[in-house]
Image (tube, rainbow, N blue to C red; front, side, top):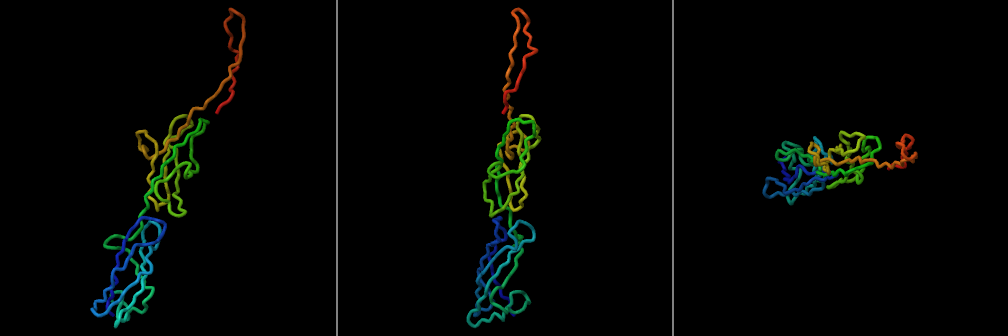
Length: 231
């Protein structure tokens, strides 16, 4: 059988969007014989995986239709291959296009770390469960029910009052996450971290009364200091 060439325009790579849809169009079918024609209709074009990673491919499925005086059985889709026996549901798997490996690239997204604060309570500041909207927000799209896997760490923290950098990490490899925040200290976290502020704890003290006789040196040893309240 003669080799039938189904010419296609294939975009080998695109950004992650949570789907397997691939960008493929069939441009023409070449029979190599002037008076014989075959047309192809694309039925589907999908990546083998919706995720970022090695080993992806594009699976193309199409139907063929023979023109007048043309028999598909006289053609093959692969060099030295078998004659075409069916006109429907023909598949082709592509792993490379013009030297470019087929695949899906991470979707870019920016995570802004929201500043946190607390009043001094004798414990180190931590963020145990980083929640969207409370501890971080995004610029960009999170597709479907995806979880970015965000964790936040308060760097070099202590129980003392002061400011500490909040750094972020993400575990979902389908996203290229850039962290940003208000941290302005001249260190490796500048611009990419949030700020956790531990504020001084207000304390009200009641000073007890004292009494004595005129001319004596005031004796304050019996004065009682009592903490009225703290916040």
